[in-house]
Image 1 (cartoon, one colour):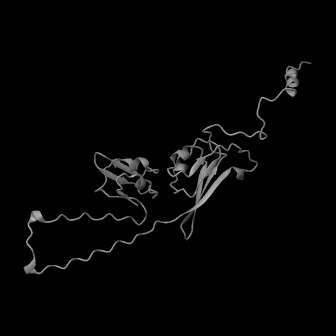
Image 2 (tube, rainbow, N blue to C red; image 1 turned 60 degrees about the horizontal axis):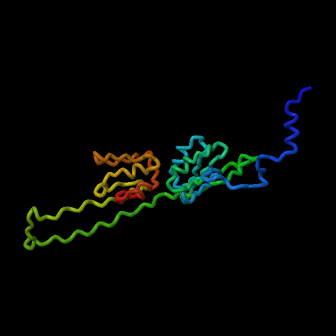
Length: 222
């Protein structure tokens, strides 16, 4: 009877292993290794961009209405995650982090779940500023004569924020540089430099405030 691998089997019994034993000798992961996800809910604004770009559909969320606001719970299922880190790349607020932890052997599915919960409070409605009192009209005999070319120009109306927390553009300051549109995680802004137009898609906008933070001229109000 022929045993072709008998010699190799015997040699393997008395030779040193060529592999590092696990977990007797834990070692640090290689640089830029993408291991277990850490989620920072205190930094999350619930723009849901991470869910849109996740190729493995590994990110889900639930929303519970409370008196304080929306109670958002976001879950990352490492069993479906491909560790491509696209979600972290698209997160402008650093709420998703990939670590060097490669110890992800689990006997229960719950051990592969990374979750976090936070309260997203509704936008605070700001009261409109009181209108200034109109100055008393001068008497007819005291009314000064003002030439048409000397009349002061009327001040532009102040831009008021919206009640729903979505951005408003101050066209008098905007230079249409398109930075806000490029930074918008939801793709809700369209800026045409040639036509000098600024368009907001209210269905896509999540009111995250990223556009206002990125605007170099501070012409976007939240």
